[in-house]
Image 1 (spheres, rainbow, N blue to C red):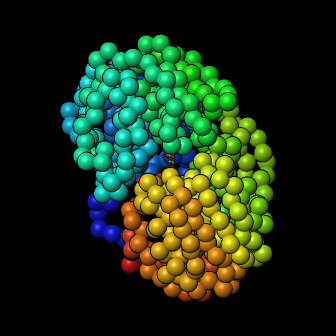
Image 2 (spheres, rainbow, N blue to C red; image 1 turned 30 degrees about the vertical axis):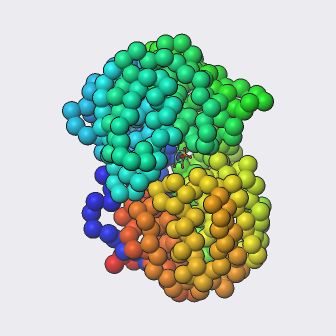
Length: 447
Ligand code: S3P
């Protein structure tokens, strides 16, 4: 669980060049899915490179509560799965901490089994919308009873006789898509998900890897995914690639801190995740992909980011939003150091993340001397150019790891230090953020 201890105020100040290699942790999305699919396979799945962030540890605990055995042995994690349809009814409430991915995917995975489970989370997660998942789960025959507005805590009564569904996702969300696919696993026949905009496709790739029959196709209606229900999933050996969303922080820090040259090796560059890096290149960033290769069916590269004094504000293509949805907070920090406006349209989903990320970033950026304009689904940062960003603000992180890390990155290049009221949520996705950034030359202090 996160957000339950005392807040940890943190600050960062202008530092010398960031230099060296940044070995960021494993991918959060793939880590959750490794544990959940491992729990639904028959036999032992072995996972190396698992992100040991609080979000993923909460999912590991949840899988144990549903009857799987999950153990860490040396450097690897081992999951002994119970098979599709084999989940046991948890004896207690499932606490998913800060993790929307955890709770939504697990709800999907249990919704087509004849069991009942109650889910809760921290103050951030308990504010987030769950109807986007429980609406399609109801089509399978599951029932949900939660707080007003479809909020956690919430009980899901799994379907006794699930039926397969065909569902068009109303929001571009890989969590919704994945919840439907995981529910479809234990429904007889074919479950179909149609998304108008393609979102991260880790569930599809991994389900295929575990032996499910799944096919994707681009049609006039959108991106169509077809899954055959009730497969026997075969246990896998999984090497989790390093997280591009975590790589974003040392990369963006290197671009804005004078004299920096940072290598971030082994980063997964799945096209449904890599939008930030192309956007930074469009802004004039000195960012290169070295040693491009394929690993475990995913494109992987070493990212080299160097200080980029002449960044330009740009119009970020809205069709790229899904492939960089978690990176807008740190992009807005880079935009502050660019010349001119960076306009970010088509990003309504940012309002329902761990925090309302447009609001959270706009508040902090304004407090640091920036002009930020915003609407329901867009925002614009008016960049001041390198050397012109005052900083000197104490900002709220709203229990959101990416807000906390973004402002700490910002403080590495502002004239005056930047402080966040609570850096504790950083441990949900990037527990080694502080030592890793300090190892490159950053100056971060606590208290
Ligand atoms: C995730 C999907 C995205 C992303 C989240 C991880 C996933 O959320 O923001 O950090 O692993 O499926 P949405 O599906 O709500 O866009």
